[in-house]
Structure formats: structure tokens, C-alpha cells
Length: 399
Image 1 (cartoon, one colour):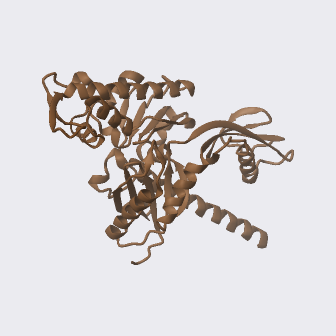
Image 2 (cartoon, one colour):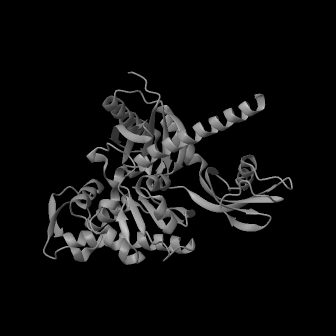
Image 3 (cartoon, helix red, strand yellow):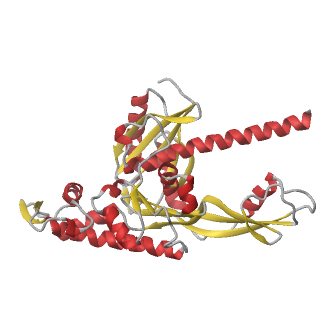
């Protein structure tokens, strides 16, 4: 296959699907070039428990994207969820009096703040600068060119399970792909589905995965919360399978065809044929019975999200509300249930900021993969700017 080094790749490894999206920069814009998807297995509650099925799924999704685009994929930005926690940290840097603060000193203050102890089996996934303080004056957005004796950075640290992260990168490497960088999946969803103005006025993004729900919240363009909640689509399926006494595969099919997160939206007379778990054939039950099960779990999920937003001090302050990404977001009535519990506006997060997007990718289950692609573009721009800065520094030295 011909090599195309200019393209970018986002790789979203999910408990039920692996999705791969390839894009290319053209005139400052990012165009969708190719994509691939494959069913996955080997996961439990958002964590890999058997590597081989996951490797096979990555192989298939990447091979499909390569075949569709006539290219060879060598590296990708990969999403991480399920095991992520966050905490605030501060790091001071002493300054030379009378001299303006330089980029190097800002970077050192941020680096110092990231040296906090993370605990057993925790590794630093991302460090997000929140604000700075100069000589004790807090709330400074950009301290460059200011003067003072002490610079302090306030940084939100996102930590992941070291073992879970290692397993994730290992399966991608086994599939022949180099991991460029890993990021918390709701960050990717936010890149694809929300804009700067929403981050300013307050917004939360919940990535509803099969194994977990991963949540971030912004207010005044600051990251206020980043957390994983151990409820995902798999629990909805298990609840339905147990309540209806049917195999999980049949429960998943019934949810996809007839599921609704608000039971009263379902006619009392609507009936379903449910396969028996014992294999004794079909039996009839009320569709509302299924949806009462789903409503209970959905209400619990959004109650936990509400608690996390309250813990972060942003409940009731997010003017742009909540954005839902992931395949579960398509469930009928889920947006309505979220609005009922959270008392705020809620919408489905469809991918944006990418042109020539195929219609089949304009769905919430593809939002994270496309956001990973957008992050790959941001990463390239950052590295390009760093190279230009170093080149300018060298020119100044030798001129």
C-alpha cells in the first residue's frame, strides 16, 4: 500500500466496538479520509481482561480503514476511559526579580505541579493547567511577560490505572500500531461536539460507553471535573436480561429495537416476544416492563452524574447543559430522563469540525473517535509550533 505520512488517525477501543477514523489536513481544515469498525470482546466494565479478542478487533478496524482509504496506518491517538480519576495540584517556581516571566518558567511551574504523588497503580494521563498565581495573586490566565518573584501553577491531574493503561497500549502495539498519545475519552468527545463558547458558559460531556460513563465539565473555559462512573450500556443489558429472564444477546437486541428510558412514554398495550433463557421458545411480556427496567438504571446514572457535578461545584451553573456521546445516547427517552434529573438542557453530541464527514459517521457512537482524530491534529500543530520556536531560538543564537 502507498504510504501517506500526512494523515492523522484516531482509534477508539470500546467494549463492544473498535472504531478507527483517518483524516488529512487540507488548507487548515481536517477532511475525513477513511474509517473502519469491528466488533470487540475481551472487556469487562471498561477494562481489558483478555487481550487477544481486542487485538483482533483493532486489526480488523484498522484493516478496514486502510482498505477504504488505500493507505497504511502506522500510529494513532488512542482514547482511555473507565479507570480515570482527577485531582488539583499546585507547583511553585522561583523567578529572577525584575525579569518578565518566560515560556520556559511557565512550563517549569506546570511540570512541578505534575510531580504530586498519584497513589498505587496510578499513572499521569493528562495535566491540564487551570490558572496561575504570581507572588500570591491568584486567577491569572496567562502569566507570560508579567514580573514577580514566585510563579505557581494550578493544574488538574488526570490519572489512570497503570495496569489498565499498559494493557491498552499493548494490544494496540500488538496490532502493529504505535500509540502517539492517550487521552481521556470525554476530552475527545468535547473536541468533536462542543465549542469554545459552550466551555466558557458551562457545559458537561458524558461519554456513555458499554463499560462505564466518563464525564468532564467546563466552566469559564476551565476544566472543573473529570471522572469515570461505573455504569454503562452493559449494565442496562444485564438488568434487562435478568428482569426478562432472557439471554444478554437477546436483551441487547430488545433494547435496541424497543428500549426507552422513560416507561410512561410506552403504550400499556404494547407487547414483546422474549426468548427464554432456558431455550424453551418465546413468551410474551409488556414492553413497558422492559422500559421500567431501563428507566430505573437511567435515573441512577444521571443521579450519579448530578452528584459528581455538585461535588465539582458546578451543578446548576452549566448554561450549555449536558452533552451525551456514545451509542447509548441514542436510546429513546434518555435525553428526557437526563433533563428530568439534572434540571438542565441536554442534547446528543454529534461530531462536528470535520468536513466531508460520511453520513454513517454522523452519530454519537462515532463522536469520540472523531474527537481523537481532532486531538491528533492539535498534537501535530503543537509539535510544529515547538519546532518553529526552537528554530527561531537557534537563529537568534547564531545570527
